[in-house]
Length: 159
Image 1 (cartoon, rainbow, N blue to C red):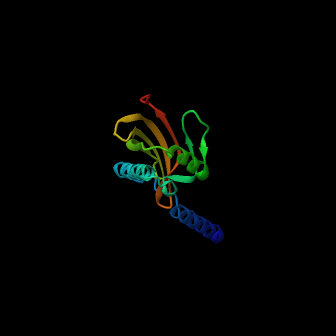
Image 2 (image 1 turned 135 degrees about the vertical axis):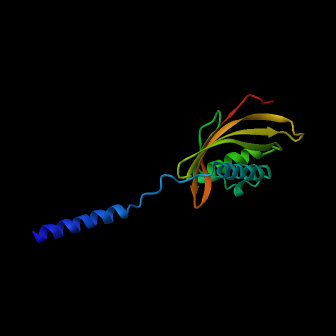
Image 3 (image 1 turned 90 degrees about the vertical axis):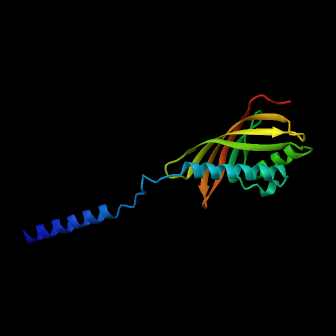
């Protein structure tokens, strides 16, 4: 009888220990949407400034394994392909690009963000020559958001 009581007590103790050692992340993590939107807009501003300055190798916007989907061309996969595409895009080009984050949809833990935004390309006289919308998927890596996938669509204002 003593062995049964002792066995039950030890078993009950292990059950309490297992329940108290639950390491599951808090599902009620609070994500500050305004702060995330501000961070994503800062990434867009940095991308535009770096691109407009022609400093392509310094664009820290994309993850190394990112894929970009542009219109009328196969997907751009990887860092080297992206660099070559942007380099060819900038040859003899004085246009200026800007981005505006319209909405962000953030995962419960804040590690992934889908951004919906608006872009504008202007010529050297600041006349809009192309505008449109884009969607980007970001993931937080080493404490910073990087773009994993993006896609854009012109709204038809091209000259």
